[in-house]
Image 1 (spheres, rainbow, N blue to C red):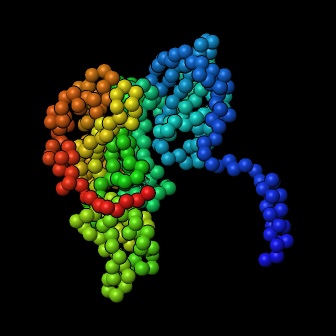
Image 2 (image 1 turned 60 degrees about the horizontal axis):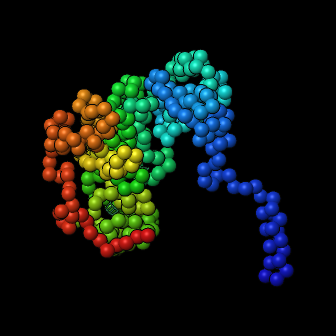
Image 3 (image 1 turned 135 degrees about the vertical axis):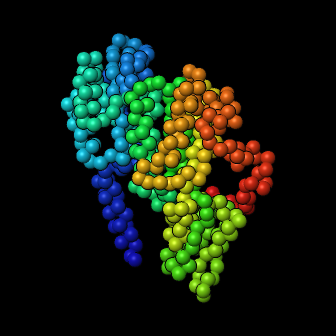
Length: 372
Ligand code: SF4
Ligand code: SF4
């Protein structure tokens, strides 16, 4: 290449880069540009808020400004038609402003009390439910699932929709002792559900390898590196390069399946659901807590997952009946004790449910395999 060519190329880049627009798809956009003007004006200047009814919050600023927030529930995964409907409602009833909470609940804003009821009527007429504030069972969250991820062992969004259909009455009122966050997770290793109640996939057997396909489909070093407990080794099978799994080490996590689909781990019989309780990320009133396993081996049973839903409803019913005001699910269980909890919800209590880590040398898979 001629030195002049390099110079020209640098010049070309300089001109091109000067013309390029700033990237707009990296990081969070500035939220202020989308805020309701009254929210922008009173940022950091709110005095207090009230809960006039489930699904509605009234925010009062120090200067006397009042803003009503109306929260609705959706089916979580939103199609274009639903989004357009919500945007039209925002245009007609909420000065064109709408935002989504982290649980995919749309929130609308009005500045006069007289506009609250017409907005609620319109939302309900369009098939949305209003609620999810204060001590309700808020919309269940789910991990990305099959829309964006290559690992799912179940349809977490389907589990969420089925359960929300059953828990809709608890979304519309605020009658729980404290707020209840329920999560679902379609594998056990990455996003991971962590909530007052969590429904997570549980694989119960190591992957089954189709050795004829491994050499053509999988990059073997990548697959070996992916295993968190170093259970995968390269191997020659029937004269072809393949992989083998040390089943004594395998923790059935499913991480090897995405980089190597011939290592199939999902199946109708062995992919189960597990229910965990007491998880809490917040450190507002106490330390964050890990959730604990309370039910395992529950059938992964689409399209309505009735077995898992029945257990969740039973736990919620006992919590609602027995917890003191403002106790979260985990705090309620700690107060009454785990044996009593298992009696109340009629789940089998076995030695496998609670691990105090004293037996960790035997019960944990140990490995010198470190990844950064
Ligand atoms: S929980 Fe697992 S399978 Fe589900 S989206 Fe997250 S990483 Fe993917
Ligand atoms: S399922 Fe998980 S632990 Fe088992 S071999 Fe695959 S990556 Fe390793």
